[in-house]
Image 1 (spheres, rainbow, N blue to C red):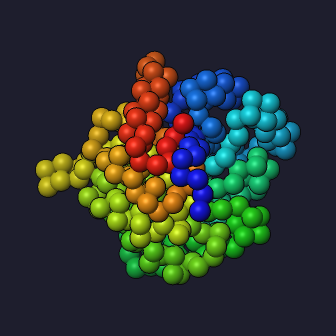
Image 2: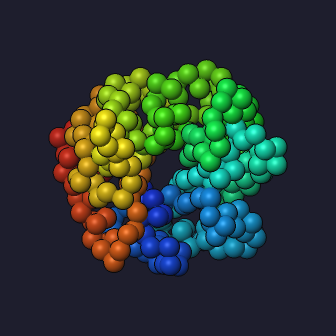
Length: 290
């Protein structure tokens, strides 16, 4: 049993910092703000998809920058599959989904990234069906096989859409993809926003969680679609004290990532405030961010 008094590692989502910052500036900012690592974003935009085409000299230059500052890129948020989903009816899009997965694993391997967060969408811009679900399962099985070869962990995000918005649903998915390299990467904000009992959900999947996104949200109600992004920690309805108590109960010791977005010039102050609030909320709960 690990030492529950040892602080958990807390990383920072890259998009919590302005996109125009250089990598040197992002690394310095994350370190100054007290985070332990950065989660790099490979989203559906052309600019970030281009990162999958980086030459080796570009990749290893970034890795050396991280090493010099002792600020690793521990994980990758791979949301590019929202645009190029495994469940698509278009074979060309499915082929692109596989290519993106292969490139992302290669990039992770070279950068020293240990965990890739996958988007839990069968499709996003297309109509869902039994066939999109079947193709998604096949894509996840193929992705797990690729990850096994590289020894890079895949963690499926629990999403902001109904398709995969709970760890209960992940547990059903896991039965079809039993690889030890295919696990869950829950976003507590998404689970809370869809009105699931977050503590029960975390306990249910305690053996399959490899990393957690800490994000605040507003819940979906009969009169509101909820709000799943752009909130500073403490502005929403997520019960973080209860979450930290549950993490202590399940003996959780894997990393956490603070997920926010840099919306204006107050981004650094917002991150300091969010980190301070998380620390305060976790003080009496066992393992806490430092």
